[in-house]
Amino acid sequence: MGGASVGATALLLLPFAVLSLIAFGHPARPAPRVPLAGADLLGGVLIAMWNYMGWDNASTVAGEVERPGRAYPRAMAIALVLVAATYMVPIAAAARAGLDPSAWTTGSWADAGRLLGGRWLAVAVIAGGAVSAFAMFNALVLSYSRVPFALAEDGLLPRVFARRSRSGAPTVSIVVCAIAWALCLALGFERLIELDILLYGGSLALEFVALFVLRLREPGLARPFRVPGGLAGAALVGLFPLLLLGVALARNATERIGPVPSLALAGAIVAAGPALYLSAARRR
Image 1 (cartoon, helix red, strand yellow):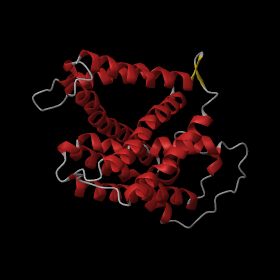
Image 2: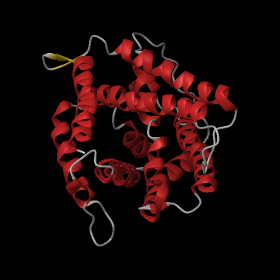
Image 3: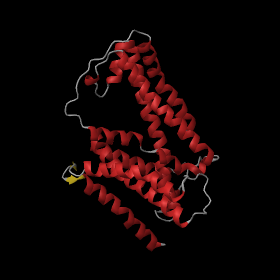
Image 4: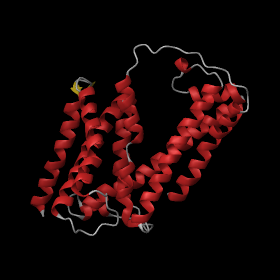
């Protein structure tokens, strides 16, 4: 999966590198200045949160990584710089080429490729998007399928989830996750973002709480990688993410998925967790 991700990253970035070189190789054309009207700034923040969530997913495969205490901080630092650059450089190139920002919608990168390099570059940008979706899904299957697998090994889910293939992949967990993901396709992009932020945000809040509690109760626990700063550092590292999650809750308070409020549906899914935990504990 690691090798495939590196190769996919190179493939998906290549069209944007070409687009940027073409744009910077021509004289600058000022883009029209269009005042924003009715902009949903908070909605944009939520989409940005959704785009940047998932950094902690790498922790679910820490047992399969050599020297995670050294590899993870380095990988995240490199990834952060790469993510920022791959957003800023193409956007700066599009602005230099004079593309109208008020006309940008889904698919506008393909339009930018067509205007700057012709049909071949537009097709390359679309292909890069497909490669990006495949690579992200591939990485998410790796990280998410390990969660039911680990729960099954701890006796919190049926043992069938702990079954592995000859290569070590948790096959039952992957198939069940795939069925659940397929059932979610009918919800639509915006509703999936709302649920993802609420559910993932809840699990992230538990991680920050666990960090603080373990720092308080188990200060001498062996850790491959330690957040610096003692108790204060453990509290501060989770403060701003938790504030953003609170904003997301307030923003989605009135949203609905069919006849059901989004918060109510997310709350029901979250409440199922303790119920399953107590049931599994009773069986053990």
